[in-house]
Image (cartoon, rainbow, N blue to C red; front, side, top):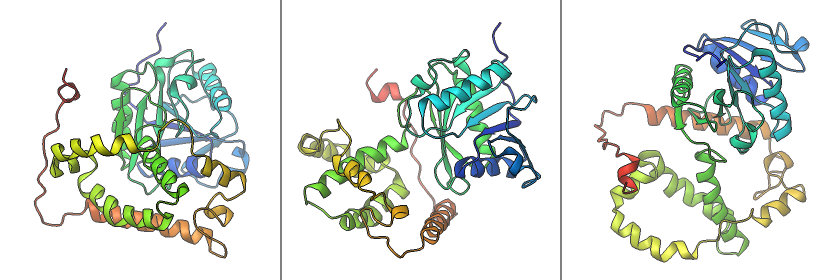
Length: 310
């Protein structure tokens, strides 16, 4: 018997209540969804937020959407999905909160793979404006669109991906840029400070206003195509993780939390730095969303088939 199609999502179950799980739960609570949380600390957490029902095991009440936020370990996540499917069969949609694991591998043991998708929130989840929604290997388009609509109700804009790719969209873009940055640093071509200044004062502002692709239309694709023929063959191959980063982490130079990464963070208030970053991002997002009184000319999107010549 096929599981019922979810037409309405009202009841949210968050599995895992770390930093991300807590923040995402709050976004749903504020949007007046019914929220339950499963956590090994369920008894301790009970009563800490009257808007949320806390449990140590899956409750009997049927959720519409389960969002899993356990550590990035394939088998640990699969165990959560097994528990959810055993308890609720194929009734709820199950989403993974992974940022980098393969949804195809995560779904490999599912009894109801059509009910599986990925949700990628960004830190800090309460204030960042974008969430990525990605289909599992056989999740239908209508369910992806439904989840996207629900996230819109919590104040989020969504990047919608109807096919699974490792890393979603935004992390893939970040990693391909950072891979080249690390190579330039490793070979003494540019310093971290110069790369960051370039991103803040040139790449970042352009992306804020016109994105990546639209900016190339504005600049001119003929010039861009010529530059591609010259530059792309000289870029560092994207085949293995950068060894410099791996070595830094192995030495305990993991960034802000360790007091040292590409920069020296010793003696600096870690939480204050993170709060400042969150606050500034929130202020920038508000500014970009504000009405400046200037008419913004928006082009019409073209279909993917036409772009690739089908």
